[in-house]
Structures are given as structure tokens and as C-alpha cells.
View (tube, rainbow, N blue to C red):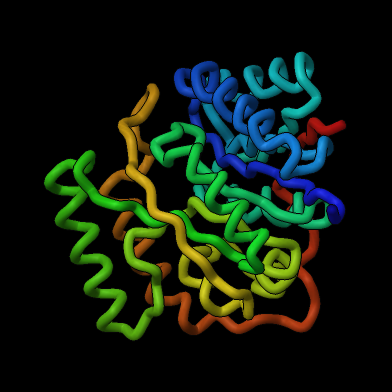
Length: 251
């Protein structure tokens, strides 16, 4: 049997003081459930995106009680995509594979098992794809359909109903590191990184606690980022460390 891969969950967090105490044990259990398929050095990386509540204090306590939890604190709120990118770029030379997922656990954590299986079969990127939008409000379903129709019109190769729940191996992360600048539209880059891409379907759940951070304004901003994504070109050198990382908890 070959060397087991080191896996890092990369989880952006913004004002998640209600959700984290409920979801952190679920992430930790999944790490334990994957023993025998991933290395003991695997970690849960929580990225605090300039939260205004006690999110960072909760992350610090989790780290102090269990070294499998690591933390990055950004000095100010920079938005979901920037926080996720900061976490992925920090983790890329410490692990073999990352799984990005939101802190609220609306994405089914058990789909990670199938993602790891796809990785073992040779996929460098595995995207979580929603089986349905039954849990969405009417407004969110309508805007989502319009969004994907607009992206298709502009020639985007987005994977339908895939957001930011995905597995990426080190080669894919290195390819991503060649895209510089703020607010990278990550789901728009998935098919441009040269990796074999697989998909896993799952049912999306209601939030464990708290409320969605994606307002209509943010969804429209994301759509604009999607349109700009096609003009992004890779650089020849990896992006430098993110200067917005104000504090690191890791062992």
C-alpha cells in the first residue's frame, strides 16, 4: 500500500459563532472516519474572514483542545472567495489534497468519502454537485437558474450546481496558485487547471445554525466575477503569501 495522503479540510468562516460549536465535532468525526485512507497529519483548517463575533475565540479553543484543528485569522473581512483562496494557498505545501467546504455543513460531509474514492481513481479535482435545490427559497432557485443561464450565454464552462465544495490535489493547487489577484472566482477556474475532473452528487441540507451570508447583492457581485473570470490569465510564478493573514494556529 502506498503512502497515505495528507488531507486538509479548508473551511472559510464569517460570523459562525452559532454554527461552529455544532459543526466542528462533525468535521472532526469525519477526519477520524477516514483513518486508513488519509494520513494522521491530516487537519481541519478554519479560516476566519474578519468575523465580528467570537468565531476566532472558538477556533482558538478548538485548536488548544485538539491539534487536528488549525486556524488562519484574516485581519479584515475580505469575502468568501478570498478567504477560501487564502486557506488553499496556505495549505498547498502542507498536504496532498484539500477539501473545501462551508462551516454551516449544508453540504453533505459524507460525500467526502466518494470524493476521496474519485481521487484514489486518479481525479485531481472532484466537485460536489447538488442533486436538487429543494431546500432553497423560491428567490434563490430563480436567481440560480438565471445565473447559470447567463454564464452559459457568456461561454462559461461552469459545472452546473457546483459551488465551492470540492477536492483538489496538490498539482491542481499549484496550478491555481498561478492565478493572481483578489476575488478569484474559483468555480470558474476548475476546468482550466489541467486536472482530471470528477463529480459527486449529494443532497444539500438546511443550515445547522446562523444565517446565510450570501445576500442578493453578493450573488450579483459573484455573477459579475464569473463573467470576468474568462479574462483571467495564469502567471509564471506562484502567488506570494497572503499579507492579510494576521494570525496562524497550527501544529
